[in-house]
Length: 535
Image 1 (cartoon, rainbow, N blue to C red):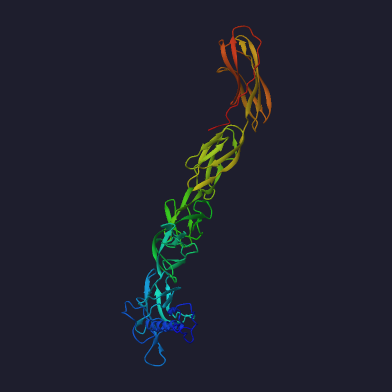
Image 2 (tube, rainbow, N blue to C red):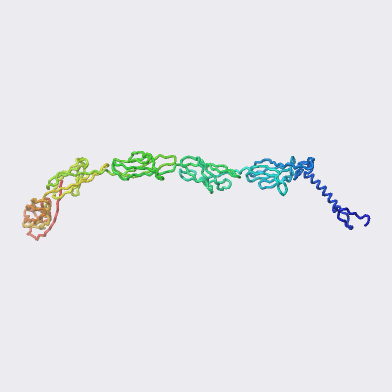
């Protein structure tokens, strides 16, 4: 081996004879370099006892682990502290943390809080932004696999302030009427499960954020809408003014009977139309008013007949305004019986009868009417009537009196018999023409329709001249044929009415008198009746 060839160093790799010596490949050189670098790293990282290189603003500070080199063989770990520029912050705010070991800032320390991990800069500071309210603990952990906590710091992020919004279905309601209040977040409009406080009451909203409430008393109210704070939010209450008016309730008026008589009382009952409860009300009938009392009842009596409105009114309460109620009451007159008396029950035809009308209860005279044969005859103020009966037969008299506001009279009747003959003339047989010097015959049937046998005169007339007469006397319901043989020589020619009469009944026909000889006489028949009675 030539004398100038490089020699091998013990423990190193052999050198090639065809290569030059390269120091960066020399193991010994590499080991020496590593020793120097390790010593430098210890000094920079704080493992030494002296301060870091440079001033504080340019130093990276010591890193884990931290030891206090005080000349002892085994250095002691140095305590790590965590501080912050503030411990209470609003959502969205930041906190600047500082990590120191002893009095030296710690760079590259890991601070963990609220799920975030940040490392301190060379001044030992790290900044964290907080969005979610709550209570937190910031920790400094070792950058090792076990992540042991070496320092703690409690802090709090204040709750978000959320304004509430509330809207009422109506701003003016009536008592007992449901009012709905919808509560939402002012920022998002989402429904809120909160509470509505009013007049000492608390009503909670449902899942849709709606609370339903009502009021028993009219007036002005202020609703306070609230919500309990949560872990992350606190809510600003809102107030809603509400006006409550009295509810309108109708009154019902009930009557024990809707028909009564003068002076007879009926019971009026006033109740609420909605609940049926009695109401202390004023009842007015015929311009007179009376209060019912708490039971809602009052007797009603009237002294005159007619149809009346029974009206009820009641004062308003704190919750209710009453509308008037009414009912109709028909008051009929009191019934009073009449007595009808006749001066005689069997009356000879042509005589007068005196009728008298009195009250059946007291006998006092009553001015009224007496009906005879379908005609009403008015009595005097003393209740008496005198009347003459001409026609025999059965008579029914009916007494009546006009109704007054207080009384209605019940009619009374009495029967009497008019005794006498009642002659009628029928089947008149007389010529239609006759010569002045001619004798002719006139015949008629006479019947007694009365109830007694009496004589009377049958008379034949031409015009106003009595030509012939004949006396008749018949039993009741007996008839006879009466004939007259007459001459009209004393009468001048002309047109006449010829009659046959008995009493007041007459049968008549026309006749023409001439100066010629007798002619064939046509026969005519005519019947008439007279009036049955006269005053």
